[in-house]
Image (cartoon, rainbow, N blue to C red):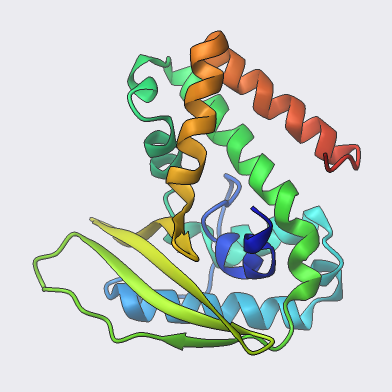
Length: 210
């Protein structure tokens, strides 16, 4: 997962904490425009805030809540990562997995924000039909001269388009976690997955990276 590290400003949008949001108005009726606008807002915010660059978890959370939360659907991300196991989980278990998963990803990548400096984003031509309800916005991030594929998957809601998955170097985030989630659930049920995520979050909070 280390290949995701320098892409934190884009990934953070998907891994938002729950809470009130007060993002600057962004047109979410066009997926291509929305991704470009939100991504640029986040990059600008990171470059302007030394506390975010230092990986301060409170500053990261504030950034995500204010700039990105309204344009993502992390519950859908978690549901797809759990697959058929989502339907067998109770509402309480579902909520717990969503919260622990979000916390895990924020804690895992918050320290990488310091690496956001001079990356250049090149967006590929957006191709979609007006009747499409699930689309992909494709881009390439130039990191020290090296191109990195970064695609956003979005679906259409009554409130506008929402990001729910990311593809980095050919690896979709949801797919990357499906096997791990399934293994934990097969071993000790949904509660076992919750315990696994909670324990990992505690390790990260204590400064343990392994």
